[in-house]
Image 1 (cartoon, rainbow, N blue to C red):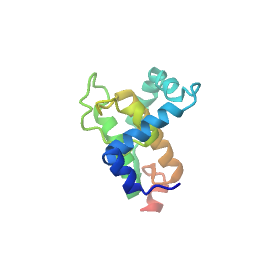
Image 2: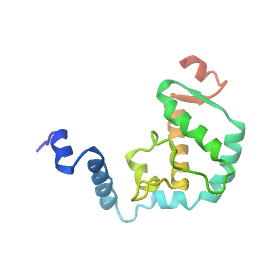
Image 3: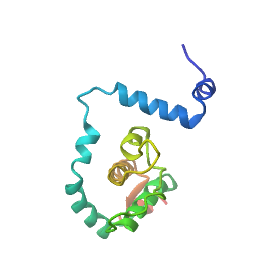
Image 4: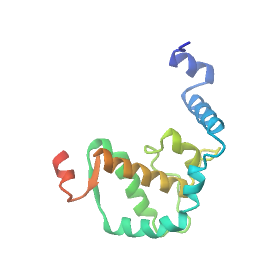
Length: 144
């Protein structure tokens, strides 16, 4: 039986509550042996060494579709090296449903490690799908 989206929104108490319910159901129905995000987050130390070099040496460009990813990479550059950066203005346009739980806590606060991995995942996806490219790579100019 198909239920109209507007009916679901109303029953859940609005768009945000519906999204939170879907996230909760996804987390509860994921197989217990699926530890992808936990395993990924445990590699924070390895990623930090790579991230510092990436942010220092590579510039990215892209189409309008890649703007949320580019904004998030710019944010990572800005907070790089800060011990406890203010994460309240973290760009949230890159947080997909799958990344919501590792990135946002119950009070909708951003987890820096989860957010960083989310941005890198979205950057990788953008590089594959072409809305983002390394600046000067030729791919960026071809799409402009």
